[in-house]
Length: 208
Image 1 (cartoon, rainbow, N blue to C red):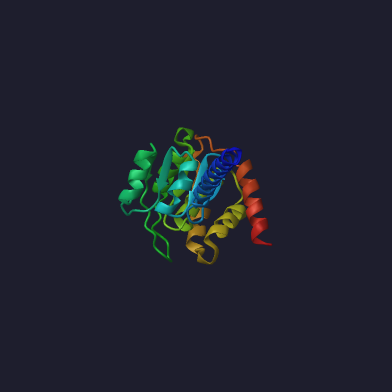
Image 2 (cartoon, rainbow, N blue to C red):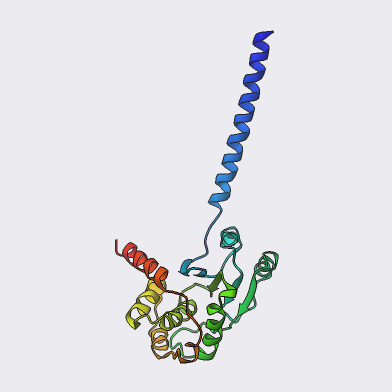
């Protein structure tokens, strides 16, 4: 009788352990599913950048606890993405910039100004800026933010190059060089200390 009781206890203990392992495995699977969007990076505390978020990225994006998304393409936002924003209480701002290749002469400065006003308003933070690949349009908006933060032009170009890589465009750099931040100086840009640390680390990693 005693052995039967002991055997029953062992079976119950094994069952509980199996259940615990199942829970740990399920938690591990959930962690593995947190996939960031293409070209995801921190711009500043509360400001992020990336390529277009796919459905597989939604779990990761939820961890950012976003208040806003700034979308820089003219195409309509997919229904699945819009439903995700609505269900998570995320505000949506669209500034349609055509994604032409060289010569990239159609980037409207006024549209970038309006996008930056949204980015600079801390009531919209945490915020994600994205276009299709997170390279050119996003790179230009972030680059203009850096100019407002008084980054030297060579550092602005270096950061742009990190994300655009072989796809870097001379015309984008020309736009960044000529962009006038005068109409935005009354707005307070976020401190760039964090961004400089991230930028230096990313530069160091890319040169390893």
